[in-house]
Length: 319
Image 1 (cartoon, rainbow, N blue to C red):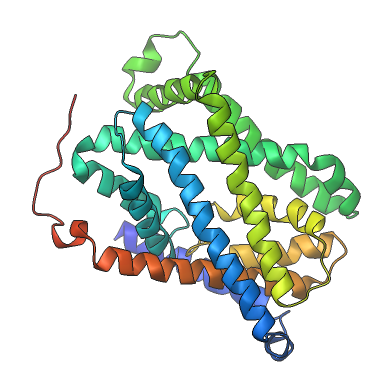
Image 2: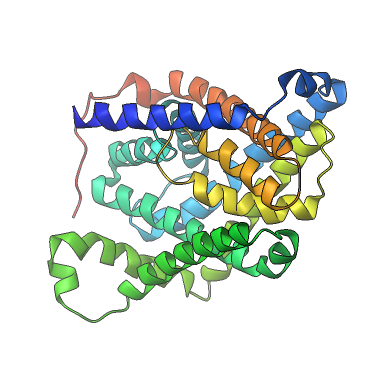
């Protein structure tokens, strides 16, 4: 009953935010701007998204190996594609993570290693995103004149940065009770792994490069969408506005980020002195690209060996 209630709330939030955002959209104008060249840009956005997923796979493989759940590249790519499908279908923007966790655990790694690999990978990605936003603040402040917009940007970014820093600091604290108390034991273990990876001379630079590339590719995907409708927005503006929107969209309060992304993108464009409707248009097409990738991931899931064998074998819990 609790799960049904939470799902219903998320559906309501998505629907309400979509309604508020779409009131500012002009669908006839948007349709009139889509032509053959637009389809080419959308196709490029889809191709870049596939490459972004592959870059995420490379990072996840490094993390999963450190967590005791090593994954072959091909298998990790399949799991990530399947995750994109469930991101679009489950009532959360992180529903795909739960499915990836299930797939890794059923593959023999066990719940603990699988959970650690997903959690640490997500944490590293969040820290990298917060750093990207902080690094672009001098330019973002010049772009956003509205004081409320500036305050919102600072609050969201530094909250994410503080959460990431707190997570890393937790793993360096020497207090024995952190390892014994059930509420902190696993989070502390994940923090130890994250510290070991991030500050490793061998793996740290690789993880940083892959993490930053993932977020740069998100901006490139959004730029391809912008070009598909010839919106009067520069790449620099896209790069400054999209990361904070993606950070807010990560909040698990809607269906695949729908509604939250559109409302936030429209608001961000408005704060930057751009047309709010263009922000909504870009967000809708960005969501359509994600939906197409998710549909492909659905095909991967339908024909996967994991779907045919689901529930037929117990999940091991190696020590």
